[in-house]
Length: 528
Image 1 (cartoon, rainbow, N blue to C red):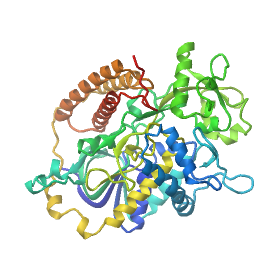
Image 2: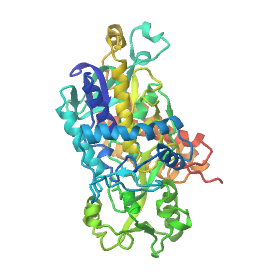
Image 3: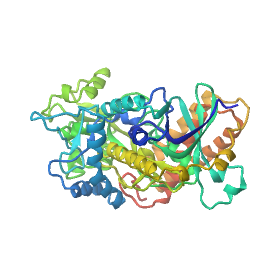
Image 4: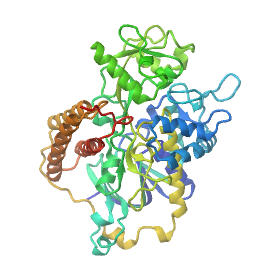
């Protein structure tokens, strides 16, 4: 038997900036929220790792200036309505949630005004930051507010398995014959008990983060495997732009499961990329040089590495940054010292790594998806803000704004008339274990992950060709089919859930990349 069958007004899966701000918005409005995370602690996602900061507004900023920069970085494949919404409503969300509600202490200039920095692709300084640990500072405040709120039930070590829908799970024919498919909550794996629990919800919000861990090199946390997109796709919600995977040009060159991000703010402060010959090379690739958008910088670094046969390039801050490096970038400085590099005296070895997912679950400006009662926010969603390439420091703002917007929309629509009907809730069965063959082998799971990550890195990575994508598609389709059979005969575990979600996410990305024959932004196809 399952440990329990829970009914909640709103279920939120994911505790990053989008999930947490949505939870606070909903709980402040008087709704009961169940907030779950697969990690031991609610701050284990990518938000905590964000270094550079969050877009705010420059002095006397015209929102159209930010719109222009976002559209340029996104190769004008953005959703104009979403970009306009972010540029106009974003600063207000920062003020109301981060500055007033939570009191995040962003860095100040000597005159007491906010120290607004500039990063690649931005026409002016408009980014709030806390040195180089902005995400950590924001999440500390968010987590304190979430944990103190009586209206939020926080559950840790819970891994979402699948969304519950009226078309796929209801036992009653009454709901299978309805034209509208409704999300009714989710099956959740309790890692402590080793059991799948049924959580029914009037509304469900996915905020599960990105997909970086399906690649060999990534700056993302271990939970970034595309689970939200996979669950939504399996429930027949629309996904879009899955081919647009942004690679960050500068991760620290060292052996690690997760690459350490060297923030774009270092280049924003004046640092220059140099090759093994000591040459500053970015001017040869783009007139904006080191402050060009990330997709351009990433490909330039790859080209330099390939042409010289090097494993990395270098970021020279010593000779080009006037700031006190140790105090301006304390987190980066400390990490560099761990591997024997003193950024105050020598250049930092860097390589590209999978960083941000510009695609995902299609949502409108209120966070609504194409599946009734299902919302999405943050990196697992695709609002259309980023188009084919994300502008620096817009991700935290998007997560914040859409978390608030989704929360307000659910709260505004919520009434006794909009709750799940008792008949529908009662027709959703508890989880039935698909099999009892205990053939889970850690070596096989590790090998499947290695195959998946190497395939995605080599064939669906920074540069793509038709031949590479067809090879990747065949390999990912075969792996997914194998895992489907395995999934149906083996007792549930977190390792199996994660592998299944990761493989399906890789399949979705590969199929989208194969279908898009154009070369734009993060999706860079070499014509052969």
